[in-house]
Image (spheres, rainbow, N blue to C red):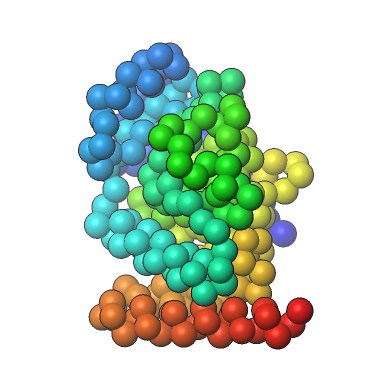
Length: 223
């Protein structure tokens, strides 16, 4: 099975984002402060910094996937803390990135609940990151999430959706089922994502909630 991460970050074609080479960690920190709450994403990887602005389609897919996570945790009664575009960074790794959305579940959610500032030197990484690749980036963001120990990434790329699971060798590999939501198949989620792009939001949400409820009932019946 193909590996989802690779060390070829410098061979990826240029993108609409701006890439700056030779950036010190302190300058990356300063850029994060300058950007603040603006809708601008900063990715940092061992001296390389990319600045890009997500597109409308990019944000739409992230919203739909995020809503599905919320419905799943509600119907499955899973404790959750959402981080949205929280900056994930570790100076010891010399890396940082802002996922489209990120979530902590169960025990991890209890550890970070109520915190005003995330410190990945002590706090657990998110259990799930949502990554929407509408436009390609020049830095390998999956490689960054893997280095931080994020166990699962849902990656939307055009018309495809992948559930990526972190492996012991530090790479991600696609799987048909979610690690965080056992019984949830990527094909089912992909169908709902495709429908959500063109369907009125209210009936779409009702339909997915019913699906999540059926999934919860199935899990309970299988115990």
